[in-house]
Length: 197
Image (cartoon, rainbow, N blue to C red; front, side, top):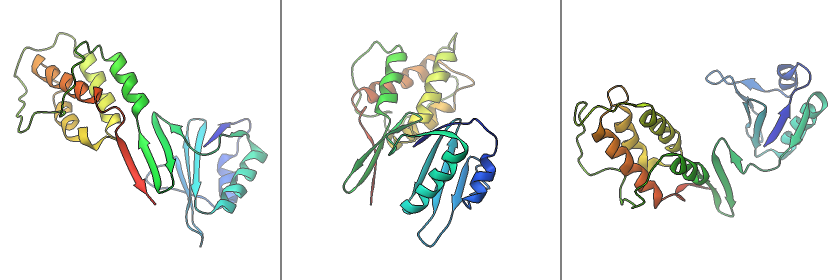
């Protein structure tokens, strides 16, 4: 990961010199192809991730960027946008444990019992079950946070999808099932994804 403090214009010029092509689906992603494999550069505000199997090309790109911009090389990626990356001999792991703990701390959850599953089996939620919530903003904030958490937690994806369908007409029943997801997260904060080599 590289921290990039821009002090002169010309990022696109430097990228073109390094033979990167913008991705047509995401303008913050640039790709360079070579016989050694692709090099991918991702921009996010003033940070960037540079990854490739071609270490020589990564060194070349870093040198080109450092000649134009004030930059700091932060070394291998360990934490980015709430996602923790840990490296192992047989692969690497993505988790959002810190993000999950922060979410639980700010959720207002007072019942610290854990749940075995994020949702009851064969549950059928309806739009008008229960009493409408007087202030739905807390529910909406929690559900949007869970949507982001589902990046590394496919075990909650289905439940979050169901709960997000009721954003427009929230009731106490929906909120109760949201609390069940939070209780499930209490006992599963360290779960994540593992990618083997």
